[in-house]
Image (cartoon, rainbow, N blue to C red; front, side, top):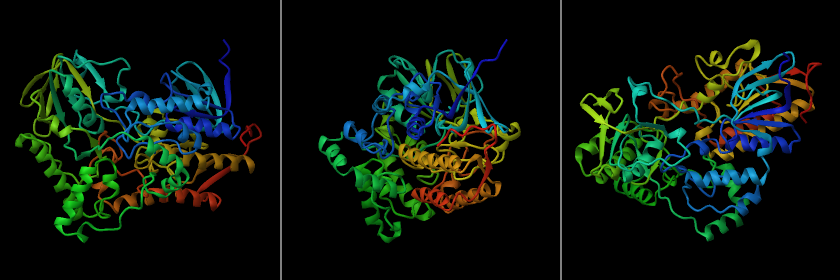
Length: 546
């Protein structure tokens, strides 16, 4: 029986979220034949999956959490709130797909089950869940830094017979909490966003807290028509500020001021003003040494703990909610009434550090202190972040070596986009890049623009394949880790350091240099790509890309 024919493209993109959508648009504009595969039923990636109650942008937000490449998009799209809810972001991405006719080159409900490099042909071949086999010279992995759900392995959890949902895989149909006894495991971003919403409806809510969190007022508010008009009128200047700022948003430079340049009274007044204003701007106007000095960090941590005590009426509950790590060294979380939720009569807090889970039954969760009957379990347990989805894909490079072998000890890469032994493969928001520390739509654009230029150079010069050298990867590792180690971030267990996944390499794998990263990759291009090994185009290779 003849095998299925292989579809041929210049580039295959895996993922139709924010990064994959721009990859398709940009590479098509370059004149390339591109195919995108995604397991969802439509575009959106993270914003397609994360539909849990309270889900919204918990970063600097709208109207600048958006694509920057199109003036028309800025002119024609109105944002309603500073922290847009999930449905609004998804509406925007669907509009982008319509505006640029993206869906015609995307195959939905299709998982890439195998991706391997053919050294003789200098091409990648993928096999999909729908039986399609496709080949391309370039493989673009826009698989998402936060898309592989972390499913906890707790004794008896699979025996639980009630409703069970992971926040990162929330049903598309409405979920009712009315009259139900609900338990939520996890108090990261999705837990802190969803817990207040669930508490408003549930008969009883048990919060199973693994780690207390520092959380800050969201300060969400409507965006006025005048504000949208001002953003549009000044879009060129604002975009330049986005390029220059370390977070990728149009803010002024970080203040070059120590927490100890002010008196205790002045410092507290500054924190109070930021707290009352709310929003992610809180972190952008902090003192410059909060992330590098234990003493400076403690001034902010103590301030937030004081705010928790003020918000939570019961002193014992407030005690359990007290974080003991360095503030902002876990993902900063914006909340809307999270701490106040624990004043409700229908909400109970279980601190799993003091009262650990022993097992689940069909109808309850049992902790050391006793049994908690529940009808529904919500897993706000986060993701195998940054590297997890690349490892789930597990492409096979030269010699058939799978990525999980290459990454057994650490996430070897150069510039956060390329991996030695995996020619012509590019990652978006992978380990070694700013990723989640930067405005992700803008970051994806900037990485993909660099990749597109690199692809053009390869074809123009008659090269068939390119990959980084191991020495370049080692130097990049030293740079990434060196920047991180100058801060307090690596000293806290977090998903940034891989501490939430058993057996995962433990180190801070994101590039903390912000906009410096984009200057670094521009310098590499300007210096004719040092650190890369080029291979001539084989006679059987495909030289379509231009």
